[in-house]
Image (cartoon, rainbow, N blue to C red):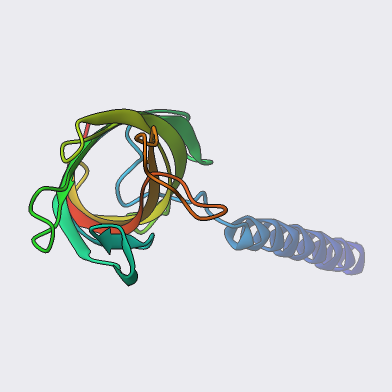
Length: 208
């Protein structure tokens, strides 16, 4: 009888030990599962971007239509953007409304004004970086010739969120402003009357 009880005790202890090991193994497997990604600052749906603009005219500009004196002056200006975005964590799509004023100290009479809209794609990383791409067009105005036309623009940018509501960023944008060709002005092949320019935009961003 004692021998039978002893053997039964050993079998019971072995079964309990195996059950405990299985339970521990299952718990450890749960610990190894990847955790859900957490954002330092979650994406927001509205952004206001204020920018100081430094750029360069890439199309030829002439002194008194003298083709031998073509050059590409530097530009500066200011730009204000408002963005509204849809979506949350897996990339956001939306639109941007832009107002921009640019000029150049080398040609004091040249002032370009642009108001337009663009499609925007933003991706916010878990570390607070916001990457963006955009493309759009709108109304352009040249103060020098008092000409109205249109401008097409593409750009890429990167912001860093200091907190959920505020950050700093930089964008590179390329814009082509086209105007009607005045009478008496002859253009070369594949040229248009207007300006092409590339700009670096830097400044604070406000998220809400």
